Image 1: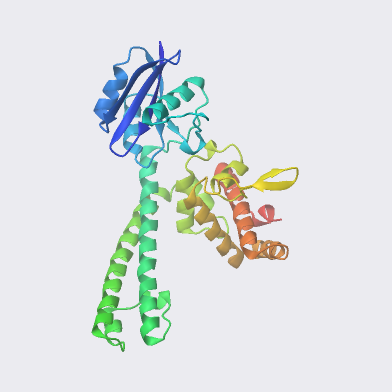
Image 2: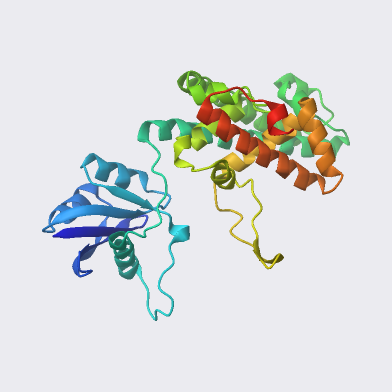
Length: 338
């Protein structure tokens, strides 16, 4: 007998539901988030387990990896694409788990990509670097604000990064204000050290990859952006076309049309926010330093807003990166923006 399992995953417990091939519930129970207990529950059901559907929540790594290690076929559910039956009077964790198993049995379960474990760790390390960079920016802005409020002067981020403790001591500020700046400066220097260490570690793991080397040929894409795009993309083969990849990078317009008229908006946040950031950043650099892309951007600006034109450049770069990663060939601005 064929069995299909659905797991509604929470922070401290999981609801496990197993259906047979006739859609009959053979197991349904709430279990603690203990891998051994969940595997034992799935093994206790008599029959052949065809697959396990797991919700793509923030804490899915341990469960999906553990089930795969046991040889189970795991499906990571795209929760944004799952719609519960309309008209239900009551819904809860058990009905949600059963619904996932039901969709799996029917073969219509919307799924997401399960990023390979080893590469996922490097990708998450790059995201940690991004978090630290944002924190460093927060401290720089705090110092700029303090100086501007109390001295009426402007301190650039480049200048602040060169400050030392002595630089602050000679300022015409109160002792309390100097202490606040010293605290910001100490944390900023600590963050600099950690950011540099993470960059070296990530680059050592990625710089030999073909997709990274190919991305470095694209206008506007430097070391950090190439790392981001390569690691956030993963296997380019999971995208059927350049349009699918651009959509995943949030580089396409989100709108619904009927009879040539706009009828609403789609989910603009559907996709990868890290790729969206990377391609917008790349677009700004490309417009600044690549003459061909700059001319294309200027023509676009003549008929639309600047922000729309930058988004259009990001879209073009996303499509170009798809071909560059897939073929391994160097980027050709004239071909992409001709």
